Image 1 (cartoon, rainbow, N blue to C red):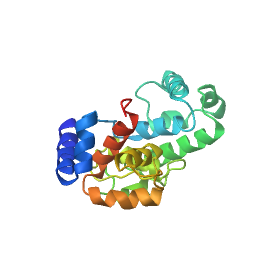
Image 2 (image 1 turned 180 degrees about the horizontal axis):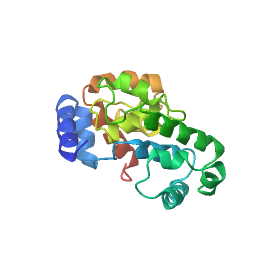
Image 3 (image 1 turned 135 degrees about the vertical axis):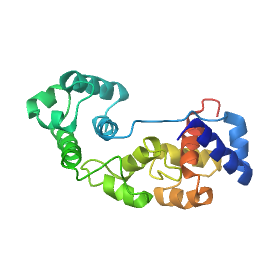
Image 4 (image 1 turned 135 degrees about the horizontal axis):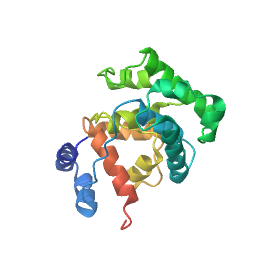
Length: 203
C-alpha cells in the first residue's frame, strides 16, 4: 500500500469516525510498509517465526550467502538437511521452506496471480506448511497492498484497538474482526494505523 493510498484511506476513515480523527491528530500518519511480491518474502516470514529479529536476520544472511541473493526455489530444494541447518534452519523450518519452494517450483502456487478475492487468496497461501492465516494476511497487506485486509489475530492490532476505543480489555480475535467491520473497505490502512498507534511512545 503506497503512502498516498494509506493517507487517503485514513483521511476517509477520520471523516467517518471521530475517534480515528482524534487519534490521527495525536500521532500522525504511519509510514507505508511495502514488501516484495514473491516467494522470498514468504520464506523470510518462515525464517523469522518464533525467533528474535536479530536471529532471523542472521539466518537470512547465512541463507543468502549459501544460495545467492537472487536464489530460486530450486536452489533451496537442492540443498541437503545439514547445509540448511548450518544456516540456522531447524527441521521444522526446513519442512516449511521446502513446502513453499515445492509449490512454487511445480507451478502449483503462482504468487504473481493469486485470486482477487481476499479469502480465496488466504486459502491459497495457507496451503503452504507453516503459513497460517496471520502470515497470509500480512503478505497480502504488505506485498500486494490489498486495501481491506484485516489481521484480527494480531496482538498489536488488538491492543491498538483497545487503546484507540478506550476498551477495558483487549478484544479477542473474533471481537476484533467484528469491530473491524465498521472500517470496511479501508481495514488494511486501519490495521497499519493501529500498529502505529500502539507503538507510539507518547501514549
